[in-house]
Image 1 (tube, each protein chain N blue to C red):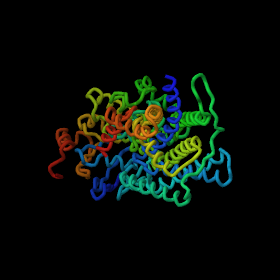
Image 2: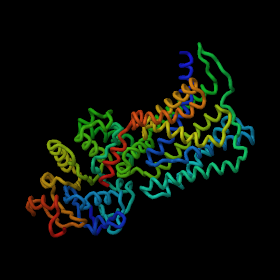
Image 3: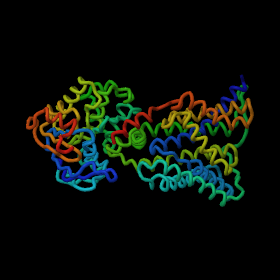
Image 4: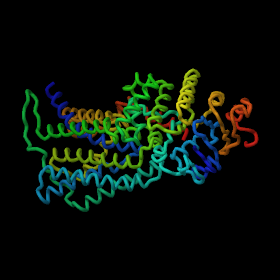
Length: 238
Length: 299
């Protein structure tokens, strides 16, 4: 569904991604693990079109989207749940959802999808007229997910949805991820929390210092080693 | 007591024009996170264009207003293309410094074009004073308050109820997230600039028509008034800008009533100083700085 090949993205002269290739299969949860600074968020931003790659291609359902404007990428069916949630704090929950549907112009369809989001996340419905900044961390994460779903994406990019949340809330977020996937959304997940990620992932990649160093199914690598490499990086590449 | 209330009424009236100035400033600052020091001079270009149309053809209020707004928007677009659009992402200081340069450029341009430096401006309505109980109302100020209020309400509606307004607010709060959702940030910034220039032009028109003249010194006054009102209200908050404009208008008028016109000049800066000490974020402070830092740390 999504094929990233040989992507190089740099900040000035520093290459954050040094030729990354990976694949996300339709209907699956694919996970990208790796230590801080490995380039996970850079990859997400490149796929979402916020950063332009210097080289390489991002093929989605056969079309090359590398370097396209975010709007085109959203319209192609890819939505991003950004790191740190980035809900609009002074806008209400309903306004956040409306902003998520910015690229759409079918008012009736948007209203209908908003109701679907409220049905899926009843707590957002209770707080629909409240400013998003007053929500708890977990509720903000739900809102960030719902906001991304407002464009009915085929592929949902999630950048560290568990960061800064209490363990019980993290479990709830992962339950939501599993539910969304079961309902047909393909998910590409970046995580620090390797333990939780390995429980939901069908396939995972390890990214270390801008390069993919492992690709396989959970279980193909001992969890202890995954965790070691996801947090600290392996000795080889350091 | 009557004097105090009378000052309060006058202050709210002039404050409504200040609120418009601050709204323009806030819109630009919110979307771009950059200070536009050429703001006052670009809307002064509008006021001079209005005065020129009046001098040339003895045109009526509407034609003068249209000329003022059109020229203010044109000058605003010039500033946006030169000092903001052309500057690289992250080059906030370059934008501020170049907008300072353009401020000087526009004022020199006006000084060369209009050597007299002071032009007369047509009043909005016929000047007269009417009394309501113990209070005096000047018709031109009542008209100013009415139009400014209408514009503030219209802007509030635009920001709450339209797609454009939603996009402006989203870009103001988290540009990265807005971009990820497909909001064309550069285009929204351009139109926010156009809108801000039109609002600024309206403020300049109202103030010039109340004073029935426009001078070259007004540029700096417009910039500082807008800037101070924005900072009093809380940077980045549209409601704060309105509050800041009103508070500044009331304080200036009260100070003038009790301590004279010279003290009025100092009042704005004194008020700003006091507020920065007591409530650094402004009256309706937003935790912009904090959120900004959190968002940027990761990117």
